[in-house]
Length: 95
Image (cartoon, rainbow, N blue to C red; front, side, top):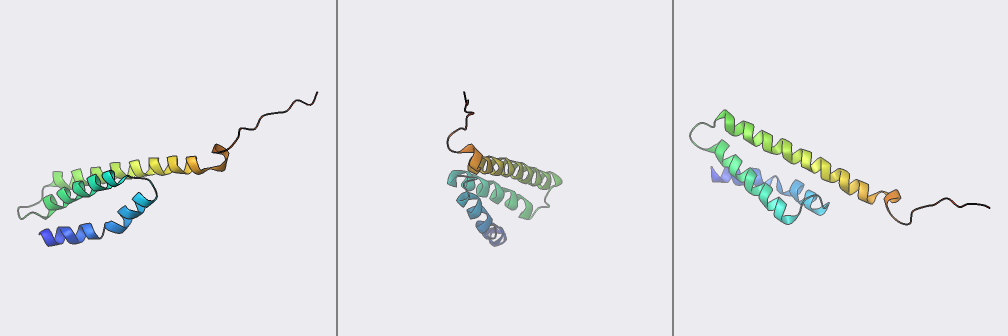
């Protein structure tokens, strides 16, 4: 069971590194995401039957994470837009 969970988590490394490198999540947040996913995967892989509630909780966590990722991506894009930088342009009076 541990090997299966580890294999699943290893496939998540590249996308999580990308999120970190883009500045969407801090290393501490990435660690929390991995721990939450690890716990969820163990619940789904346990010998006794996985309950529907475990699947639903995992799906809900991933939906919330995706919403947060989208919000942060929008924020990063807004900060990088050229009209958000530099001097403010004013109107000159030609008297």
